[in-house]
Length: 291
Image 1 (cartoon, rainbow, N blue to C red):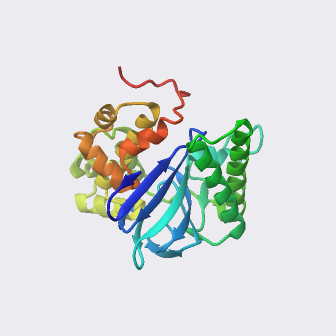
Image 2: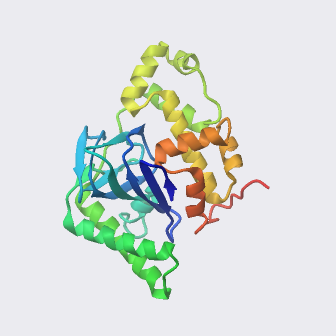
């Protein structure tokens, strides 16, 4: 549990490579950021206001909250601290829940959760059952049949979320030049180009590029790049890389720089994430940490 006087966070692992959770009790305001995953959570106590892809929204105790991959959002408490739990799902996992048998899953970006705040008693009950199962799994209080029950709870949550609160989303209408700028940042997150280098190939001024990129993607290029690096570091740590190696290979100047960016984006430290990830570390991609 990462803790301070106004912020406590626990990261929880799961039996599946593409799923993890958090439990946060915090009076902090979080700046604009995004995740590479879908998020579904329950606000257990208090209230908060946040930006979302659908505008500014407020959520109160008992409300479900969601985020889409790449959706820029923030969060600030209303009237004191608030406590919430989140479940984060890799896009491939959620897409696999909706793809017909024998067909390939939909491409990233084609599936969107349409409501940043949801009031759905049936989905809330299913999510609470899943959280209870994950708590038992993290505490080591499980039996052979618990794994199946936990997986059934996950499938039930995903099915209800997709059936009631998702849609086929059209691709974001972004000009080709901005898409190429983002691809350049994503392809080489270790090296940050200058605004001149990004703008010149398209005949844009630095200010034009900055304004258009932020309008399209919710963040200026440098902030977007930092969050791309944080997502890379999260994946490397999940695979078993040391914090020092993950920081260096993700483009951070040092481990402390990574830790600050990680905590801003996720609300927990790389060390907390490493402890949760070590509970189940898949090696399905064949990538080993450096020796």
